[in-house]
Image (cartoon, rainbow, N blue to C red; front, side):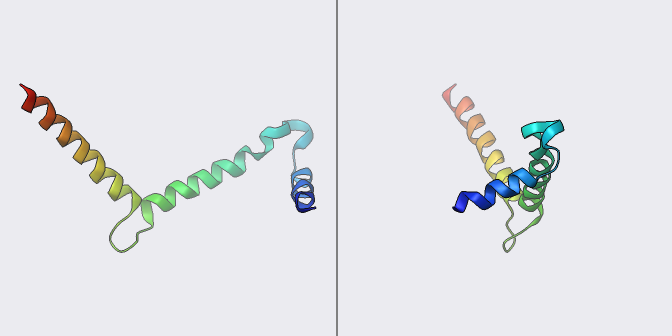
Length: 72
């Protein structure tokens, strides 16, 4: 019964005959772009996902160099 309304929405989505299951790609493309935009631009306080990722990446590079040169 709960699946019934989902099936109705899927069946009413345009392009079924021409594109088949690929008719949903534009929706997922837009959702992915919106997610990427939110991860870069939305901030909680002064922190965003992008800032956190860049800090972690820099930390990993420094740790790798320290490890590389401390062995020698």
